[in-house]
Image (tube, rainbow, N blue to C red; front, top):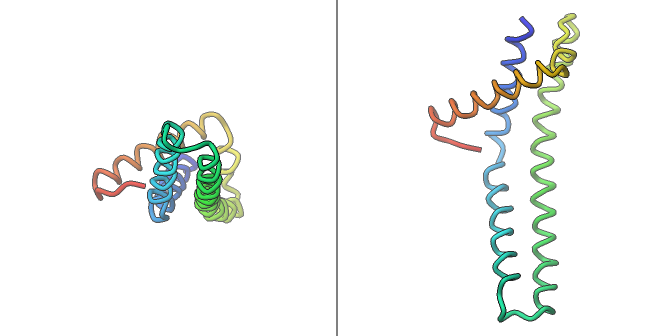
Length: 125
């Protein structure tokens, strides 16, 4: 019973992250990294302007990082609340989730669900 619940909660966690705009935010982070690398490698831009550009890129990167963290926390709070509700029925899923076996099982099941969902629906996070 506990393993089935772990599987369901792992799949729910992945599903929540897939429905949040994680992909777009990760793309923004990658774009900022590429632009930063291009500015850093450019010989035509003075150090003064590089400092100004990097300050702007740092602010954008901070915003994207905060967004990614908030998306992750939203998923954690929702799944955590559901785990708390299940714990009220004397099912010790929280304890099992914190064991090495539970973490490995959750990680593998979430990964398998992600790739299965991605191949079936054609959508990624």
